Every structure is written in structure tokens, then in C-alpha cells.
Length: 134
Image (cartoon, rainbow, N blue to C red; front, side, top):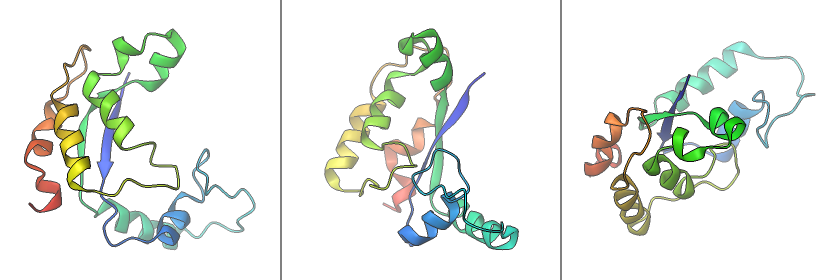
């Protein structure tokens, strides 16, 4: 079992928007167990705003298997490993700003060999950086 590794470009969103969205996500630095009643309409609108930001699937990864079996090379592909260095966990407060240097690092990361059996067919949009409108 694996998960999709996705990257979102939080264009036009503020930290307050993300804080609101992540406030009910266990493990998030914004998680607030005592935040009061859950507002489903507000959460849904916020989710829609984030879902509509430029984003793309990179490919499959299994962080859990890599941690439990202690064999990251088998469950985390080279490109995703490098991309996760560039774009740390989305649940942290410091988001990566897209610069020319970041774009060069991404191009280098997608050139790394995929040594896993997981699919990475979604790397092609990264090559052209279509998600940035370039």
C-alpha cells in the first residue's frame, strides 16, 4: 500500500487560510484539539480553496513501510526523497518559496533514478513547470 506524493503551490493563500485548514489535522503544528465546534461549511470552503491551487501528483511513496521496515530505498524513490528535501512536510510552518534555485533543484531531483517499484509517471509536468504558468 502506498500514498500519492503531491505538491501544492499555495498561491494566493495566507498562513491564516492554511492554519484554519490544518487546525483539525492531527500532527499539524496548527492542530488545536480545543478549537471549539467544527464548522463543516467553513472547512469545506477552505478545502476547496486549497484543492484549487496549482498542484500535481508526483508519484507513489510509502513513508510508513520505509519507517517500519527500515528500508527507505525500497519504499521512497530517489526523486521523491530529493523533492521532500526541497519541499519539507506540508504541515510545517515554513513553506518553500519558488525561486530559480528551487526550480534548478527540482530539475536535478527528477533526474535521480527511481529504484523502487512505485510509479512516477507524474514527473513529466515538473519538467516543464506548467504548474507555475511558465
